Amino acid sequence: MAKARGHIRQRSPGSWQVTIELPPDPGTGKRRQHVETVKGTQKEALKKLTELQRGVDQGLPTPRGKLTVGEWLTRWLQQDVKPQRRIRTYERYESIVRIHLIPAFGSVPLPQLAPSHIKQMLANMAKSGMATTSVAYHRTVLFGAMKAALRADLVARNPVEAAPGPRKDEKEVQPPDVRQVRAILARAESTGHWAFPILHALAYTGLRAGEAMGLLWQGVDLEGANLAVTQSLVRARAGKLIQPPKTKAGRRVVDIDGRTVQVLRALQGKQVLQRMEAQGAYSSAGYVFCNELGEPYDPKRVTRAFQNLAEQCGAGHLKLHSLRHFHATVLLQHKQSIVAVSKRLGHADVSTTLNVYAHILPGWGKDAAAAFAEAMGDVVKE
Image (cartoon, rainbow, N blue to C red):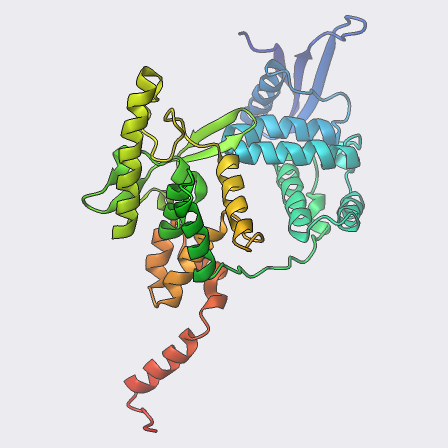
């Protein structure tokens, strides 16, 4: 497909006129053009021409006079967010733009978007009862869009900087206790619930739910008692998708205990029988946690199964992700190294682990003080 037609013309030293041909007016069929002035070098003018041509070729909203906030947000989603972010992130951004940002000030000319517009939107969200973290996230999305507009010389400043977001109420993680998790797993196992193996694995390994659902048998070494995390299964609008780990730390080998080896061996045997019964209809993909035809579980199905079991055990407030918090908490409370736990969880940085779980380690300060005193030879005998 040929690029949209356009050209540049030098108006004066350091000033270039960029002209791009737009699709004919849908109502009259008349020819339309968009003209911009670029201050800088010829190379920079050519770059702007290419950017505009790409937008026209992709069918994105094109500037008409003054670009509106709504038109820019749509272009930003398609040109910047969709190609560079994960599909779930793009879908969340798109939803925020469509449901909240465009209705709030989509018709405002982009250069005229003011801090007052943004402050009013944030205030309305807070009044509606939206969680503080969600309000802050909406502001973050808009900040990214306006930062991109600033880089593209479409605005003189980023107005979001002058519209501070709400103070985040950092909620401390409250993981389930051993008794609650034991009850849930025991109920699942005793009733022969299909979700027992994956719930056991989540509690005993600390894997993210998507990592467990994307786990392949080829990455499981039952003799060596470990499993390799190489991908994650997520649910998007288009259905179930497989993605690589977000970070290098997410791609890891996780050691497993003897009980987990037993659970996986039993699951493996069960799947051999299912494969025989399904004959040629059984998937050859090799997912560890899958349905009767070898297809990976739907994340929503696993979530519902856990919530139902938790409610039956009087712990209906727990979420599936609680099992990851539970695993980390138990390890840390039993004096496992914060570095070892961070690597096991697949955190990109140890600081992430500390930020989330530091509050559950009340005895570490006393241990540190006692260890220092001992090193100094100041041990007090009682």
